[in-house]
Length: 284
Image 1 (cartoon, rainbow, N blue to C red):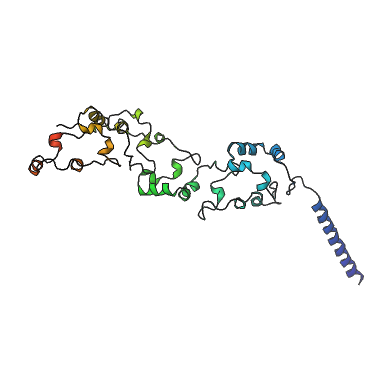
Image 2 (image 1 turned 90 degrees about the vertical axis):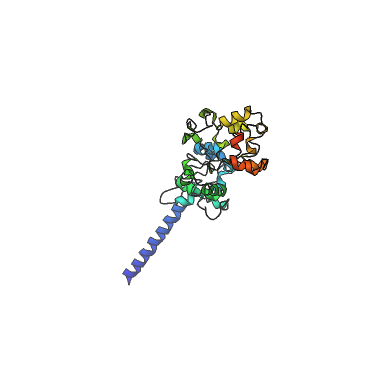
């Protein structure tokens, strides 16, 4: 009976020693304790100057938030002792899902919390653009052009919010169709493509009624010069009087003038232009 008693006693002593060692270890501080004291913002800055520079230059609303408001639990990631996911603050602690249930992975766009609005361009971002930009998505799919087949990041590259210059990809109006009548204006004067072309519906050229004739004259120089030199009433009108709302719209003469001549004359000559020439320089 002595041996079993000694064995049991040894086991009890061993367990007690282990428990004591664990309690002692718990009371000791490691080199990087995961549970921080209430550090001040200035103390955080001493070790993390780059982070504070990022916050200062492009931190948006996050630059006004105390460090501990986000970093509440762990000070640092220690392999084998903390989970990396636990070190990162959860965005939803402060933010609901502002982009709806379709975009819930915040870091797929906002990859750096200290510069939350500095969003790098990526394919994952391009696939989700329509969630925040539904009007643009509808336009680019309704008015089909070569742009429709591109990822958004093909033009808005580098980072979110980047607006490209059209001439990065396009060399339009080179020589301005020298074989076509009326298109003779130098390319250098066509600096602002957006006067006519909305990038998300580039071939659907529309314009307001008060568009000045000089704008139309950038491409249609011959027609512009003819109208300017004409002494007919047409010279006092804006181009949009006869070409309203959308490019290539041409009013019929009778929409303004009715039928001033007998039908027999119209049947004989076929069109108003047979006698009166082109509308930009009417022959009386």
